[in-house]
Length: 446
Image 1 (cartoon, rainbow, N blue to C red):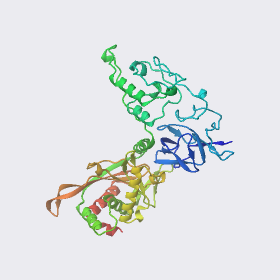
Image 2 (image 1 turned 90 degrees about the horizontal axis):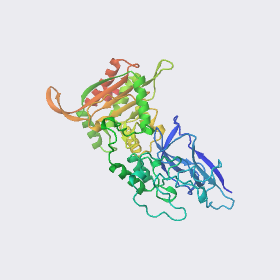
Image 3 (image 1 turned 90 degrees about the vertical axis):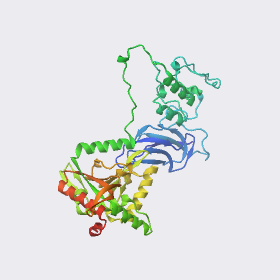
Image 4 (image 1 turned 45 degrees about the vertical axis):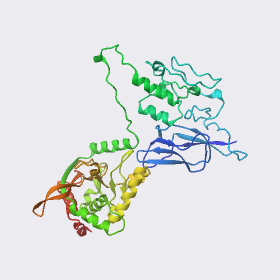
């Protein structure tokens, strides 16, 4: 007989303790190979595919899309091997002795006897479908029956198969546990959710109590988890622990843009503006190494770091991430541009690994892509400094004693006041501005 193996959510590294299920890649009854990806999860660092170490037939899945699981919790079970070498026709019971589909996502449960199926208790006023015949086409259900004034909230797994049904319910703030499905065994169909949404939107406003005593609307609640939760925790910690200060300066970037145009016209890989700023920052950190540091509060020491790993802020559909260009001080401008481009594409596709999002020593934030001139960046804890770059836009400027229209950019520099004073921070920012205005200054910094 087949042996059932339980596969738990593995340790994903970088001190991560939980992950949110983004997308199941297998169903109960599917045959999986060893090391085949079975689920896509989102951690506080990135979205990753998790491979299963066993080969066989999936007998159970634990958790649904959108649910957060702790590391070490059961993820799925797999029936491994059979005496005749044939694929099992029905999933075996989970290793812990539980049977039926109560331990898995309803709708994808084990194919045990019908008597083992869990029935969802109908809400008041809605008759349960007959067990001996297929359920007839659902008739319109009054709003008072589908979403009752005092709804019955069912416990246990939610009887939903379709991810589309779950998404529609989430979009409209609908609690699926108060609905009774019109499908077989109480399965909630899309038509049930649509009727409930319509009932809520068209329900008359009761006048039983004066308007002045009505409770205010609660509002939409958005969980702080995954990447959004990690950003909130890191920025909150930065504000709590780091006594930061910000200085800024306007710089004439006309010559920098001209130098970039000349480099790109010479052939070879194209160079981005962000890569030029990364090259300038690497040179500036070589002059002011105390800004490439971190503070060890436990020992009361400033730790100046020997390597320069520049992170850059990237906005994605999943939120703000900061990929890290490692050994930026050893890379040419073309190499920096290529690496920034590669990491940006990986960020947009959700393919960044935790290692590519950690270990930065300095951060470059180009908020000019949003069409704004200035900002006061929050330091990316536990780093000591961050350079912010605004949009480069034509402005009136005094150039060589005459008023002219030049390409001007505002640079802002936020630093940890524990690692240096204003003189060092001002010197760093002035050097960056000088390189922007006269790119030949970089030749002296090599």
